[in-house]
Amino acid sequence: MQTATWSLIWAEFPNAEPGGYFLNGNRYVTVWGGVAAGETDKEIAAWALKENKAMPPALARCFGWYVVTGREQGPPTRPNPFNR
Image (tube, rainbow, N blue to C red; front, side):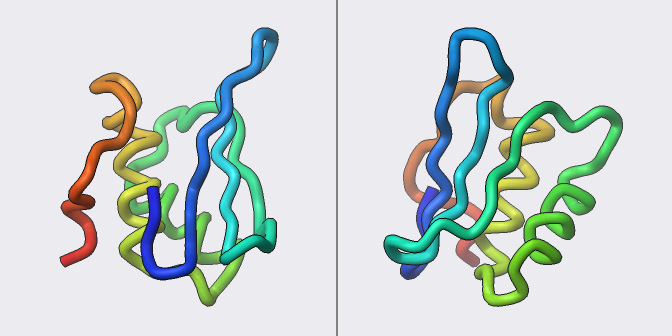
């Protein structure tokens, strides 16, 4: 997932939940790992924005949707519907 200079890269490991690594340009910002146990996509997006207030809201919204709903539908695709 990408918006402007920001990217979210998903990584899977054999013995752990997938993780989402947030980057701004080449700079690591934060990582998300685990599952959303009852949280809504808006709550997950709010977590991302709290981690770094400079994060584009469109990326945070897309991330929230993907964690709560999209993972079951497969990998992210373009265009990002949350860039509106």
